[in-house]
Length: 316
Image (cartoon, rainbow, N blue to C red; front, side, top):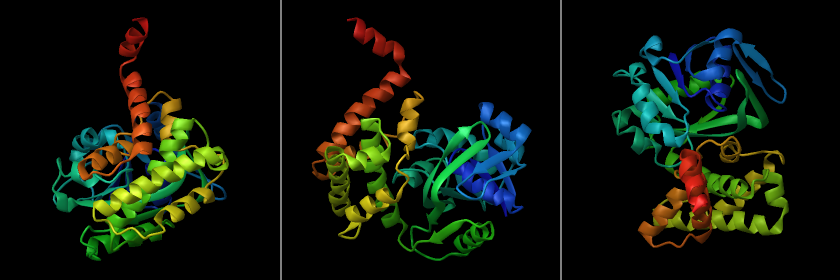
């Protein structure tokens, strides 16, 4: 199996690193100083107990890689359409595209560029980031991938991909109800990423403060109520499970949305709390916590995208 990784960050770099170490035919798309380090020094993955460095093929030009059997699509949600068009030289008739992004609408957005039958929905549970150019830092439990066909069918391609992951030592499983899995992760991430970013605080501080923990739980409950209106059969204890998962994370964990804000990069709030707000309006479900998070983070995105606009407003 020839594999291409679109987005060599905390997700693509971590899982791609394990696939490369297993000797698979894998190729990475990256850019900037990160790409330079990958080409010169290789990819280094630093985990709790399994550090390694592996030489890889990394490029900024998908044409150099050519058609692959599997694309691990790991870019930020707001780059989906642009990245999909960019990666098209790696996609041919039999290529499968496994999206490992945050959010619940990535398949629909990718289907605007590729045939929907090419796309596999999936998600990851991982605490990882680019620590420095060429270096992926991971904390907490080993990263896990859950994916599957929307139909729930255990197809030949799903089984082949699963076996490939297992051969590389990656914790992965196939779900017969991937939409439910995506919504459970969505509930978790809207709460944890939204409230942590709004509070500019590591997860441990959010959980230890009764007031912010209340906001976190309230944000998750709104997503749960919305899921029922959308016909998603989340278990009745979905919020309790999400909170338990949050407590299992490293207390110093900083979510990717908070790191993006600190680094003055556009956040994924549109695909997360913004999606909750839009679906809440469509289905008549009040979502005041998510609306508050979205309103403030939407403004932050506008400031990052157009600092001149923000400074001009302050001068009035």
